[in-house]
Length: 66
Image (cartoon, rainbow, N blue to C red; front, side, top):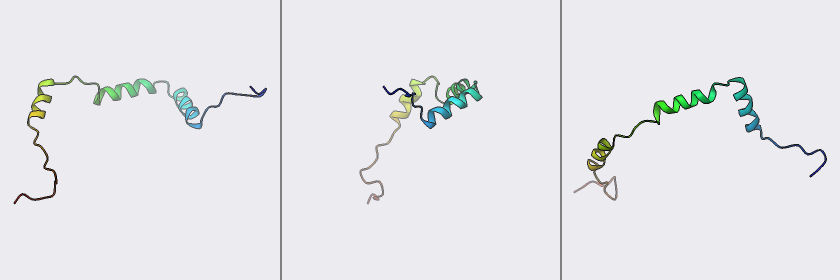
C-alpha cells in the first residue's frame, strides 16, 4: 500500500452523501413515496379474475382474420 494512499470515492457517492447530509429526512420521504405506489396488499381474487379474463394474443398481431 502506498504511503499517501487514501480511499477512493466516486463523484456519485460523494454527491449522495452530500445530499443526505443536506436533507436528513430524504430516506424517510423515499420510503413514504414507495409505500404510496408499491407496498400494497395483493387482492388474490381480483388477480385471478384478471388472469381468467385474459384473451390469448394471435401469433401475428396485425394480420386480419379473413
